[in-house]
Each structure stands twice: as structure tokens, then as C-alpha cells.
Image (cartoon, rainbow, N blue to C red):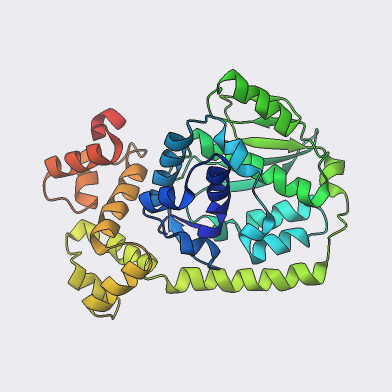
Length: 332
């Protein structure tokens, strides 16, 4: 699926930029993001544009602790129906399982969330080994700080995990101190995993906001949105046709439009409405597949070029270097 994120999640970045004295609208527009989508239920931003937003936010603030600051503006309502289902969950264990079950609403990249019971407690983990857009440090910080913020909104401000393990490199000392204040727990940087370990009693404690009828009603809305997301996005359908046709080299705009039973003009209009173009979609599809193939040692670099629809190996090498900054052989 085309990698995207629920647009309203970026409201926290908007607010953090404003609090830092930065003109948020200007930064969002520089990243190619429509600020009006922030308040439109169901609207989504592509990860490519979001990565530009993250980079610009860091450039404008020069704040290595920005991810933690962003999380302070998080609220479950940023997730619309899923957020209200969170608030209506019977306990934090139920809430975290709900986030895991419906995380594709938040992100269509291949992050994998899990909640595992251990001898010490419940480990909530984020696996990014299969993602196309590997998180930068700010995203790791924001993700876990936001999860804890959501838990505290439901449970209470005194909630503290047993430990945070995070793959991102150790930040400057002032950020280390801010991590300690925020999480109220030991933090292991440069870890081999991304996880928060919670006490069992904390996650199994009945929440005062729990309401099973409300939670189920919100779940139905989320299910309907997921069905709509997967079934109607033209770029998702077009990407599927591209993946099928790239090896044959027959993936012209006219051919894809015909395969989708729409006119070329209609395809162009619908892609524009979803914030992309056919040329960009082809390039991003090739890039996403290349980043998957490069990890598979059974696929040679020549085969990769063929599978991505390149008639010349040199053309593929140039494209790969443009995407990643290095040649395919160096990346492997």
C-alpha cells in the first residue's frame, strides 16, 4: 500500500512549531502539505512529504529534543474515532491492543506493533524492520512519548513505565535529561529494540472513562474507514497495477488507466486529489520496491533493475543513487 499517515496526527507538529515561534503554515506549505487537511477527518499525508516536514521542522527549530515537545500536544482526538475508542477502552491493555489492531488507520507503512506479557510486565514494542520509510530520531521520540501521553490521559499523570528501550542514538545530554523527566523511567538508547515495558497492574487497572458500548461503536466507524481507505484510494489501486506491470515494462499512464477502467484524465484528477501524480507514483513505487529488494540477497542487482521496469542497468543505478545517496552495490 502507498505509505501514508493520518493527516490529523501532524497537528502536534503544527502546535509544537507555533510554540517554538515558527510559522507553522509556512513550514507545512514548504513541505508540500495542505494545512486544511489537518482538520479534515480521514485526510492523509504521504510519508515522502512528511519526511520533508520533519526535516524542515528540525531546521527551523534547531531543537534535537523536538520529538518530545511534539508529543506534549498529542490528544486521542487526533485519531478521530480510533482516539475515542481508546478513551472508551476498559483498561490500557485493551487500549493498546486496539491501537495495534487498527494501526493501519494511523500509518500504512509496514510498522508492526505488539503487546507481549513478560515476567516483569507488558512489553509494548514497535518493529520497523520492514518499513519503507525508516524512522528518524525525532519520530522514535515522538512515537513513544505520544503513546505514553495517551496512556496518561486515560490513566493519570503519575503513570511511569519500567523502562524505555529505543534504537535511536543517544541524544545530547540535555535531551537525555528531558527523556528522564518525561518518561520517569530508565531509558536505553541505541538498543536492539523499540519498546516500553509497563507494570501489569498499571495496564490492567480499570479506567474511569471505560465504556464498552462507545468503544464498539467507534470500532465500527474505524472498520468502515479502513474499508474505504483500502478500497477507494486510486493511488493504492494504481500502485497495485504498477507492481504487476513493472517487470514487463508496460506501465504507461494510458495502460494503467485502462486497467483501472478510468480515463487518463480521470486518473490524473484523482491522483492530484490524493496529493500525487502518475510520474511521482511510478518513482515512489519503484523506490519502495527497490528498498525491499536490496535486503533480499537472492535478488541480484540486475534482476532488481528488470523487476522495476528498467531496460538499462545504468538507469536503475542512477535512480537508486538519487533515492538513497549511494549505488545499489554499496547499499547491499
